[in-house]
Length: 316
Length: 316
Image 1: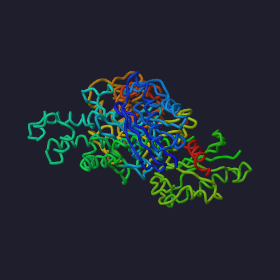
Image 2: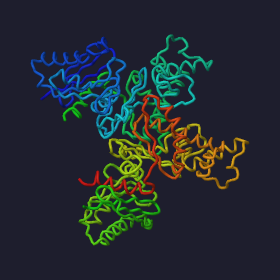
Image 3: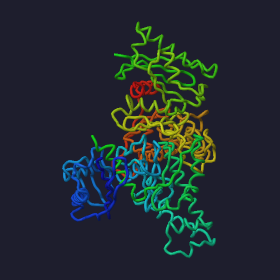
Image 4: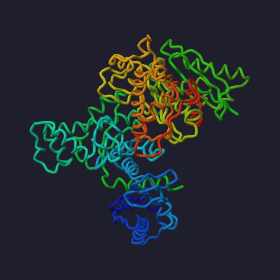
């Protein structure tokens, strides 16, 4: 059975995974991302890592079916990337770059958030469902949509970019994207901390959060779980905005399941409880509501998804 | 060349179109919807209409490649319909019902709003684009999404139901769906009239709308075009909410083009002008913005889409 490699390129590290064709992870490791020369060496490094790994098993490149890559950039339909800000390279075809360093092995590549969604849909919180929407709650809010088992990329690579959906047009602070009132501003780890700070400032009520410096999203959610009323207010506000965004996703795409990943999702069933009530209220048209699951692959979603992408698109 | 029939079932009339396989409409007509016996005769009537039409051309059913149907209900993936409120029938497989009355001709069926989107994507305002989102602005607000040339139905038939996306959670009035603050409440013909009424009541300013009884959406938009400031305010409010919803669609699905249909879209480029500014502001992540077109097929979108559905799905 041939092997598949899944590669998740990040600004700091590049994660690699070796899979069998059924998607069983055989081995995973990471290398650091060389940013010198505008990231021009990353493809050499990935090629060397794959070659080294295959040779270490006493095999040749003929034993590899192909490689999938997820990377932090918008990938045009023909595979072209205008700019990959976090790593530095620009104006190239990443799949072609890697393929020509590896004896023309098939390589498929796509945006990392969409690839992570594909991973969770394949072997994670969305496994067994035909349609899924992944929401990644970390420093920012990302997402990816799977419909009929396929990754949606959109006409300009914006599909799944739920973090920049506007949910609070009256917001005064500016989001990283330049707009005001994005979901990311209220439902990311950073956003939750800012909202908790606002709630603390507006109230005189006691809260264990008043003693915590610096405040983290985990502090807020832990305090909410113990019943701290101001922390509960912050968590419920986040839940409301997530629910609202998910209700919009339902009226546009109607996925069978939402999968919540990223650091904030470690709050687990408490987070889901904050979302489910308002989500179901705001999704009135159908008695059957989408399920809400937690992501299960953690940081491995990208390599799983990249391997799956290769299986779907690389073997032409 | 075999013929295809496209059928658009409504609560009052059933529209039929006869197409060649390239999608050129040969002839269209309509019959009224018999609601007696919980709509149980509609399939007999459609079968008779198709048989009559084909015999009138001196041909037999062998000359028909198949039939597509759009109907006002949620169609499960296996073709089952729980309930078709506007016509009355329930718990049946419409495609199978029609097929067995027509010597087992292939029949495909789907929700009418999604089918209309497919029609506009095929031969209307979205022709030539791989992905499109249709928004129908009539008494209510409907919609349908096309991705990679395919109709999205969603896991529970809610895909494209943009009219019930919540855009104003603080709204006091209740929408037909039971929720408050749906897009339909502010951006339908009915919604525009209600908002204009509110704006007139809140202001003392002069407006030609104060003389008009009863007020229609066309009155409001016509007055706005002449520069009547309160009417402009109503039109811009509708434009803002539509833009907001379209910006959400972009961050979820990212269609290449939006197509606006329904009675309100007769306001033409003025309507698009009300939307484009706020839409582009709220869609900051990409320099390239989705295009906004007007629908071109009018009431024929359903029969075109039904014929296309047959071409895509019926020939198994």
